[in-house]
Image 1 (spheres, rainbow, N blue to C red):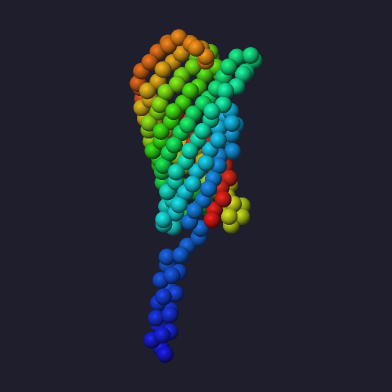
Image 2 (cartoon, rainbow, N blue to C red):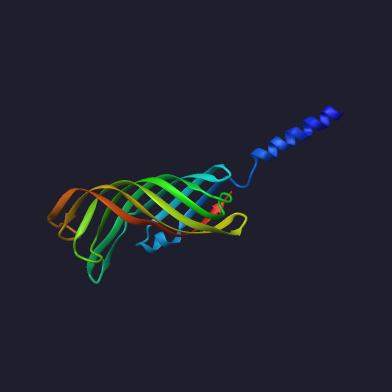
Length: 184
C-alpha cells in the first residue's frame, strides 16, 4: 500500500512541474486602429514559464481623402518572434525580438509624395502587461526595427512620376502598443 502512495505522490509532483498557467493568447493593438484603421492580430504560445512565441499580422487596404487630396498608409506586415517574461508569461515586464516583413504604400499625409516598397528586418521591443482579469490583459510597449527596404518614391499619391528608386537601410519606431489580449 505504501508503494502505491509513493507512486501517486511522484505522479502528482511530475504533473505539477509541467502544468502552469495559460499557454495561449490572442491580442490586438488599439493604437494600430488609429493608424488609418490598420487591422492587427497577434497569437502567441508559451512553451515555457518565461518564454512565449508569437506570430503577428497587420493589414491596411484603406485610402482616404484629406482636404480633397488622396492619402493612405496601406500595408501588410507579418512577423514572428519571441518574448522573455522575467516573472511569468503574460504578466509583468517583458522584452521581445522578432523578424518582420512589410509591404507598404504611404503618401499624401504630410507631403504629396508617395513611397511604396518592401521592408525586411528585425526588431526589439519592451513593455509591460497588466492583468485585468485571469483571461484579459492590458499591454503597453514600444519597439524599433531595422533592416533593408527596396522602395520607389512618386511625385503624387495617384499616378505620380517616379522621383526615386532604390534600396537602403532603415531604422524605424514600430510596435507602439496599447493593446488588449485574451489569454486561454
